[in-house]
Amino acid sequence: MAAMLHMMWQRHHLRPGEYWRLPHGEQLFLMASMELELEYERNKHKALQRQRG
Image 1 (tube, rainbow, N blue to C red):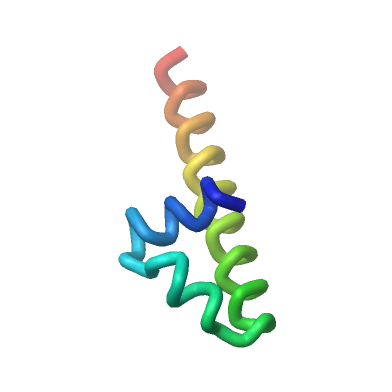
Image 2 (image 1 turned 30 degrees about the vertical axis):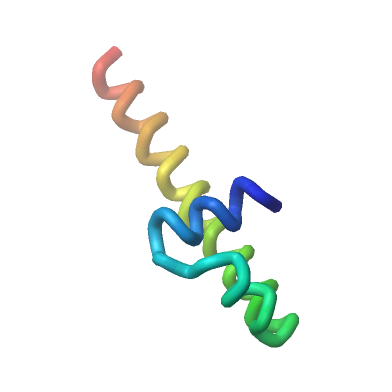
């Protein structure tokens, strides 16, 4: 959880206090969105490694 909040702050300038003030549904949406973002980056990284051999 702390790592995800840190990434939201670093990448999207959303401070943890702002996150915790959001309704629970919005918090869940943001966490799911960050997971999708990370999954996309992992897949992109894997594809680049396969291309390089």
